[in-house]
Image 1 (cartoon, rainbow, N blue to C red):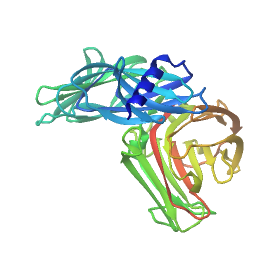
Image 2: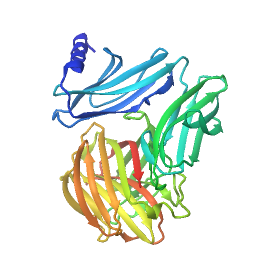
Image 3: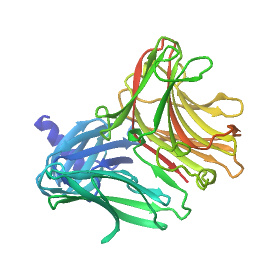
Image 4: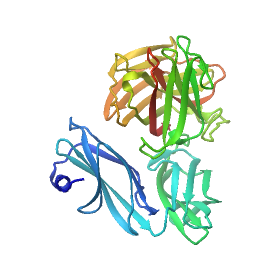
Amino acid sequence: MSKSFTMLVCLTAFFAPAAFATVNVTSPSNDGTYSGPVPFVATATTTTCSKGVGSMGIYTAPGVLVYVVNGASMNTTLTLDPGTYNTVVEEWDNCGGATTAPVTITVKSGGSSGVSVTSPANNSTVGSPVNFTATATTTCSKGVGSMGIYTAPYQLAYVVNGDSMNYDLALSPGTYNAVVEEWDNCGGAATTPVTITVSDSGIGGSFSELQHSGGWADYGQRAPTFVDCSPSPCDDITFSLTQNIKSPSMSGESMQTYLSGGEAYGDALFNNHLIGVDSSQGLSDTDHKIVPNVHNFTYDVYFYTSDLSVSQALEFDINQFFNNQGWIWGHQCTLAGANVWDIWDNVTAHWVSTGIPCDPINNSWNHLTIQVQRTSSNQLLYQSITLNGKTYTVNQTYSPGSAPGWYGITINYQQDGNYEQSPYSVYLDELTFTYN
């Protein structure tokens, strides 16, 4: 990076007018403690600058700019001396605006000791019991001795031996500034804070980093019947799912999905059973307290591809099944010759165009948020679709379909082949599903 560019960035940071923009830092955790290189993963959006985000940077102290990257996302590590840093992640748009997000971290001496919490998500609303899933690393040659959960200062609620935990902790409604801590066998320790709100209904919650979760199944679907087949290759369709992809990635663990083959308009379907039968999250709901009693769902994901021109469509679905009925909220970004969002009519089993534009960006992370509801009269309500910061209200209602014997809540992701079945990959990251 040239000296003149550095000076320009610094001046912009302190004198540019404010803009309506956001900086979302997923790593490091605020008030987190780290040993060794500190991972910085963040994205930025702007709603007022039509030219988009130009670059992002990291300040480790006022006026100390240590890293700059072009574009609206960053994924890097910084090697810092031991101490406490009031870091700032900043975005600069192409209209002269800037927005910041402060993150305070403590760096300890040593190597790469730390705690990685995959559930619950920081600042999320969850139901009780709360699933705590975490792993720990240490530079201690004797390894990690144990891990624990603090629900408040000096309130140690759970301890497990070893360097991993997966535990459902019963908590009363309220907000908790929880801390997950690891203790090594050399007398060292590391912590990661997690702030959560436990809902009073007891049946709401969220799952984060699902692209990194177990439980994914993959299938091929051949036109015109689109009957599931597996494993790959089948029906002249080739498909695959690969997790823990480092690049391209926002979290350092994206999921790559791939489709190819010799049959035109073949599809690849990827499915995860979250609650109910075959739950990948430990929520089998055998007493039927969750699935029939939740009504609101949010599917939030980042996706990346460099091959939009050969994709027929990308599909994101939320599914709920009980009492022999099925509520399938299907959302399809039709790309080939249309660039429009379609939604699924459960009764007639047809796609219906919403007229809402779907224009994802090639070679960039696209942020999609879908919100739906099962109404009090058991109708499917399509509420809204948000793509890259622009929200469209759908507000369309349909009746559920028949689904004898099915029970649970699942999500789907699907990518469709074009008339040549051109091969292409898509990457999913920061996939979160919320229900209440």
